Amino acid sequence: MKLILPFLAGIATAVTVSLYFRHPSAEATAQGAPRFAPNFPSQQAEDWLNSPPLSWPALRGKVVLLAVVAPACIDCANSRPWLTSLLERYRHRGLRVIVIGSTDTGAGAAPSPDPATGYGPEFPVLLDAGAAYSRQLGSPDRPAWYLIGKHGLIRGLFVGETLEDSRQAQAIEAELEQLLQEH
Image 1 (cartoon, rainbow, N blue to C red):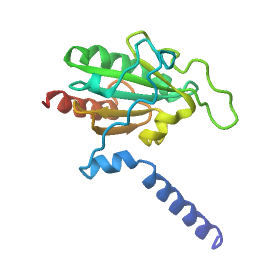
Image 2: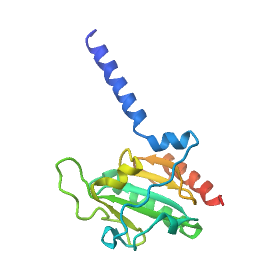
Image 3: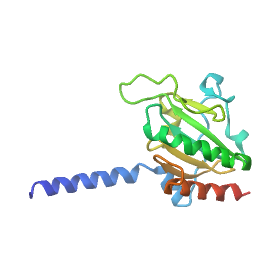
């Protein structure tokens, strides 16, 4: 038993350190130092679905939710009904939702031909080849929800499955309400 406890303590320490460093954007936001959302890596039409290429200058004045998803992500698929409902409820107030669809399905796997499966035409989709934009964001996992304020600053980061009326949905929507009221 004495040999197992130090081993388990080592695992707990490793997990704690890993989780602490996984959310650099959330840390910056929590410390009051939001950063600008990185520019979209491509302005080529073939890298965008359901929309011409978007840019942050064109989105200025809008609150944007970046939905970082992957095609084989069950939590991403389970979150789609909430995301659709969110857009329906807040679109008239200026919310834009942009899906960042990673074409990288993991080590050794072939890229997905359609990371936007299940997202309707109301969702602009950036095809994130090799998860390059996700890495620029510092995205810790999938799904990740980045709230971007009207001036292009990352104002919130939420990670994980988000279902209608869940605590996470309520937290995102509370932050969204604040951002929509700002000038």
